[in-house]
Image (tube, rainbow, N blue to C red; front, side, top):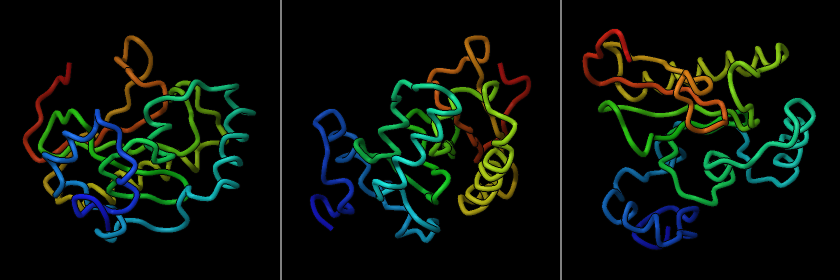
Length: 174
């Protein structure tokens, strides 16, 4: 533990994120401290390179996104779950009392571009969403959303699953 009682991975902070860290230090508990993390993390350079090469072969050269920086931990995020295939973290602009994202480590740009051989990974993302929702106390229900493309209001071109809950959600969603 270092600065502000934060885990070591939060010490490399740029000034843009300092205010968020100062005003929400209790939310920045690592997933390891919560007991939500399993398996191998992406800290190994070999694993990062392998995932990047697999993604390049499948999806071409991808443009790094803000989620790429969350995955490689160059920007802080409130990570609530992490394993060798994906991670989950709280949305920085929550639309419900509980709002987190589940993202694959493989940079798939859109759900509509996912390859058929990614079925196991896509299923894993949904199982992680379910398990984290349960750990976040969403036993009364929640919404799972994947935005795709311009008409789907996708703002970051790295596949991500929104999980929203903690209040009664309305229909239709938008």
